[in-house]
Length: 388
Image (cartoon, rainbow, N blue to C red; front, side, top):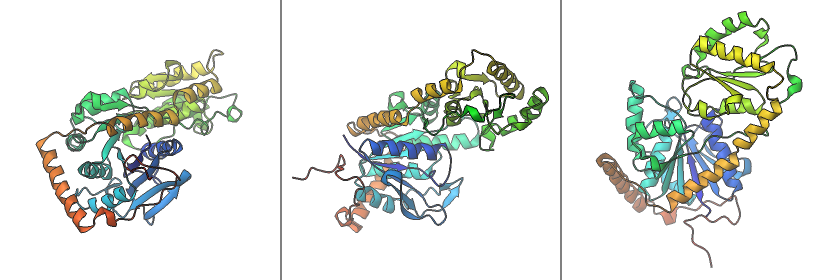
């Protein structure tokens, strides 16, 4: 069955990050499989309105201003008129929200539920349970996910975390890992030095990525390896200092380029690579230094995997086409099943949204909304009847 899918997140291009890349790559593969896919996000500066990307991917940059860390202000009601218009225009069958941080994703899923549209949510992060931020986010997530048809997590550790903090039953959560465009991340051994080991870290300089651990590690490593001053140029070893990760796409990209990986043993990281392609350490400077020493020693052994061996392994394990196929299976599940509903507060919220939707249906009937032309000729959504 072919679907009209609406991906929604506050995080999308031109912003950069793991969620942004995930939404784009998944959308491209679903388009290639014959589905119709659009993306809804907020405006970025002067980028407002409809834009088209590779393969005719249609992106709605809605005129919403960001409120906190790139997310729009949560209002529940003000986003409904425009999102309803988009859902009707594009004959959307499934709304797929991304990221627990994304206000726009949660509101879109709520509105879709009030309109009888199936919903899927992908959680890309791990959260704690004790700090104020986590408590607020987790309570909000419980409300939002109470009416979502199905959830996707990028690791089994992520699934356990989501089930516990959002009070979601485990059978409503599937694990579908991230992937890598292995054609874009290939080894180039000729650019490596034959007389030194180079250690690379590519990461955002934020607390959860372990930037403070790296600051403590570099001077110690340089005292032990006097040629590491040329670090971060061409790599043999990739180091990841994250304090929390649901998956960590960066280590997959590094392994695809042929690098040996040293990483903190946090979140879903131990699930990502085979043991002979990653040295796992505790999130301390001393443990990272020991792991780096072991990786440097391993790199000098004749038995070490070649860069192309590492690349071929990753290319066979992580493919966006496989992610898209498994995501399509989730769409089949939610489209053919009845959606969940739990919690008195959630019932009250949906009741209000349905009243608002009824008013909008009177104020602007759906038959007065012009349907959007499809980029893919011959596409027919699951909700669109056959023409005789």
